[in-house]
Length: 476
Image 1 (cartoon, helix red, strand yellow):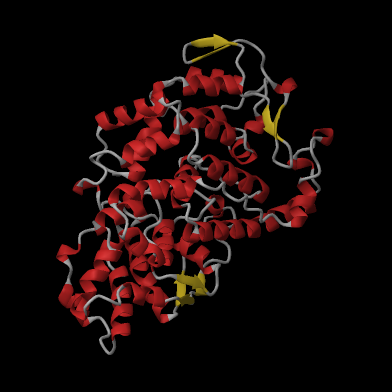
Image 2 (cartoon, rainbow, N blue to C red; image 1 turned 90 degrees about the horizontal axis):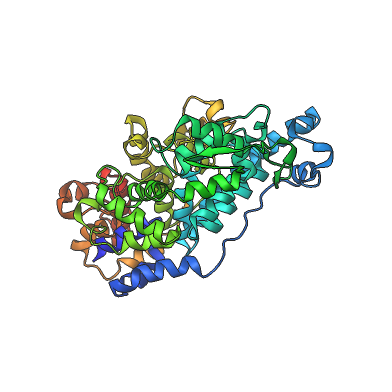
C-alpha cells in the first residue's frame, strides 16, 4: 500500500509531504485520487507578480502608442529592462518552487511543470514570462484547446518564435512550424506546404509592449490558404481550430503525457490510441486524460513503478517536502538547478528538456547523491560549470563557484513519523517511506555501518540522509 501511494504522489505531485503522510496513509485507496484531484480544483492559482516597478513603468503604460516596439525603447531603458528582468526571473523561479513545495494543489503544479516543458519558451522579459506562467497554471487542468490558444497568444511565445516579424509581405514560419511539430500534431502529420500556409494565417499576430496580444490587421495576409486539406481565408484562430480537429493532436499529447506520468521508455501504441481517442472525444478535457491514466489497470503495474528518473526540480522539491527544510540562502536553489541541468524558464530549446536518462551523467549523478549530505552537514555547494549565455540568457552568470547551501532542517515531523517504529525496523521503514522502488534489496548492513546509533534521533536523521543519497532515491 505504501508503494502505491508513493507512486501516485510522485507521479502526479512532488512526492509525499512528511507532515501529511499519516493523514494520506490512513485513507482508503479509493479516496487517494479524488483527494489529490479536488485539492487542485478548489482554488484558482494566485498570480505571481514579481516584476520590478521600474520594468512595469517602462512597459505597462506604453500600449500601442505609435506602434512602439521593443526596439524603439531608448538604449538605456532596454538595458535596464534586461538587467532587472534577469533578477526578477530568479524571483519568479523561487516563487514557483515554493508553490510546488508547500501547495496542496500538487496535481495542478505538477501538470503546470509538464506544460512548462511542452510549451517551452525562453524570454528574459519578466512581464511576459509571468503572464505565460499564469496562463499555464490557470489552464493546467482545464481544456487543452483553451490552453493552446492562451499560450499561442502570449507575448513570451510570440516573441520567442518570432511571430512579431511574421507579416504578409514576408512570412516568418518559425511559429507555425513549432505549433504543428511540438505543440499539436507532431512530426509526420503535416507537410512543409502546410507550414507555409499556416504561417500566412498567423501573419499579424503580435503583442504590445505590456504583453497584451494584438492582431495587426494591416500585417495580415487575407488571401486564401490551404492547411491540412482545408481551404479558406484563414487567420491564426482558424488554424488552431484545424489542428484541434485532427485526432493526431490528441494522440500526440497523450503520448507525451504517458511518457511523463507512466513510463518514459515503454510506450504501447494501443494505450496511446485509447487515451488519445478518449481525450479527443472529451473535447480535449485534460482531466479526462489524467483520470484515464490514473484509473487504468496498468498505472500501478510493476513495470511502471519506480522506473522514472526524477528531474532536478522533482528531486529537489521532493527533498524539501520529505525533510522538510527551508534554504538559508534561497538563491542556492538556482545554483543547484544550474548544476543539475534544469533551470525553470530556461529550457535548452523550444523542444523543452529531453528528460529520462538525459538527466544523468557522471557529474550530475555524483552531485545528486551528495545533496542530502551537503544539507545535513551545512556545507557549501561548489559548482563550476561552463556558462552558456545563449542558452541560459544570463542566468548562468554568477552561479559558478562556492555558494552557501545551508538550510534549516525541520526534523521534528520526521521524528514524529517514525516514533512508533521499533528501532530494529527503523531503516526498512524509512526506506519504505522514501523510496518509490521496493526496499526488498535494501543494503541493510551497509546502511547500519553508515548511520549514527548514538541515539534514536541520530539514527533516524542519518538513516534518512543515507537513504536519500542512494541511486534508488533518484527514481520515482
